[in-house]
Length: 253
Ligand code: PGA
Image (cartoon, rainbow, N blue to C red; front, side, top):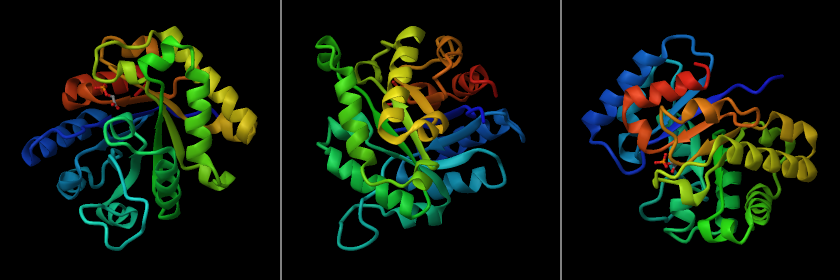
């Protein structure tokens, strides 16, 4: 079965509640009732309920930007996967580089989060990607291998059905330095090959691999037309409905 394209907006720590609802409304209106691309928006935790109301009955899915690795308990300030499903989330982003590199999230914590989120019925958008220093030392392959292998340890084939990978080279996130379509295609192809070696062809062939890092309406057509690029995880450009919708369109929606 051909992989369906998927475009998700990561709003990060942006928007007021009113802006979040208006942005969601504009995305719903622009996406229409039967898009050929899967679309999700990931607002800050505190706006999830308000945005869920706006998305209700539309094909635009709700996602969260992070989740805790335990199901409940004394974890001040944290949010559990069950809370996310109850508020209407279908997706959760796990292992974003801003958490790995900015907040010291380890591969082991990412693996634990992936398991708990999948057990609670969420779909996981798992982020991987090399830093500039790693790229300069030609370590991309080793970084994917380490991050993916650690994050996916112990998953069953069924669980892989609810996993989406996002290749996000750290040097491209929020920097305006986007990977070229060729660089993205090469990285995605290598990740898929590695996934096939680790988990078999069936898992690797069905796995959606999104590109993330400075995707804009202008560079999206080149990136989205690559055979191994199955969509995008969009930061800055997802905060402007017209930009985000143009990226959805470039993905085929
Ligand atoms: P960016 O962010 O599009 O602003 O580079 C992408 C991401 O961090 O997911």
